[in-house]
Image (cartoon, rainbow, N blue to C red; front, side, top):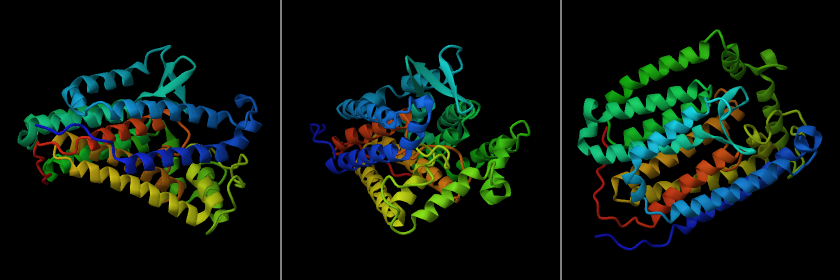
Length: 380
């Protein structure tokens, strides 16, 4: 017996809409000069922000729909959802259907728009792993009967995305899968053994002599001034932006680096524009709000007594958190640049849509946190 569905968590909904709204404002500031000065964007300073606002509306509608569907629906269909997600990954390889952007064939053509299917695949994999672990329960701790199917499916998703090539998204997917598997109670020794092939593949991917630009990202991260006009150009101008912003920033809309100095100011390096315009104080305020969002989502997930809901929520939080760490880490020079958007903030419809659908799933959980199923605690 379960209680009737209640209202969604208002605080999480408020924080989500606040982040999306702030993201649209920052996309306008970061992209207006680039859009105005380029014929590719019809010299329209509102080009990027109009598209981002459209995706925000689509994402909001999708979030409302997902929020109003009981999460048990996804629990029952976890396997078909995984199959559909993998098919979407393969469709981008089909001539006429897939599109190559920034040297990665990761997008599916939908009329005048494109959809990055690897973003949705992250959600599909989370749902599959949560459903599998919920079904297997104690058997999941046995490698051959529980963990092996999860490893095979995760490996298939990872290799398919990495060979598009999109190693940044593949890394986020793999890290998210590890979080769900660990939270699901897998043995730590199994996770350690299985991480070795992933490490070897990553090393091969980075040092592949056919693609020297990948190694250039590592060397530019260690010392960008060794190639200040080449591989280190992005990071150096990111440093300039953050240094110029200082403690309080130069003021909204007054960034200098977005005047065609900083590549991709509206996507991968939007945090650098934020740092220049809003300063250390503004960036700290943003990070606090972002952390509040993550905390609230984790709180809802932990409060649920349903194994599937708990793992689904933890997986979505992990996906968003890992992506944010990789983006901000790359912009600040803490880790090598991998080219992933900042969740809810960067320009990019696929990323925004995925984050809002994921939030909708957690809001759906928040409406049914008084389930009677007992949640088994994760064990290492």
